[in-house]
Length: 112
Length: 116
Image (cartoon, rainbow over all chains, first blue to last red; front, side, top):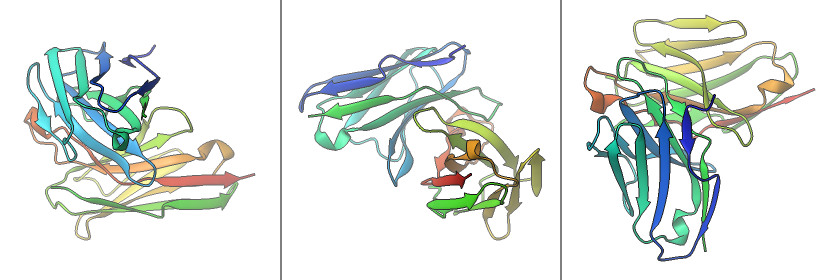
């Protein structure tokens, strides 16, 4: 019963490509988040959204943008992929008034 | 913004021993402190959490303690088992009533290895 689905488990892209990472949740959660996970650095927040069409920058938004046109879908966009964006990307969602996150399985992106 | 420090980065224990992971936070307004467990190749999963109006919370073999004055909180695992081997993350947040405050700041993680 997967509740947060990330469209790709593994992705290989070339430097300079525009990359879309998709995340869909079926729990009617208001809040959605994109984190990147790197060894020794933990989980760092890129962007989050607390409502449709609303977005806020996290701690490391440079080089990324997001889109949330529908409540269930939150997309992370790498405008021009670079090798330093090679990482594991984790999507998460949470309901307003409830604190726990539900994470997706992650997308391991390699930029070559 | 919030900053969460987590120690140690790696921890190796013998099966049956206890394990303790410690975190400190910087924002005195933080009021929610969850712990996540991530097994190899899997997604992080919430294992226990505590709010700032509580000093300790237990769930079977795991417990979390919070010292608001010192701004630190700890995860305690007793009678460790090999299946406890994973990366553990602490996190903190100031959950107010507004949606934009529902973000978590995570520590860098602790790799716990339980040796049989």
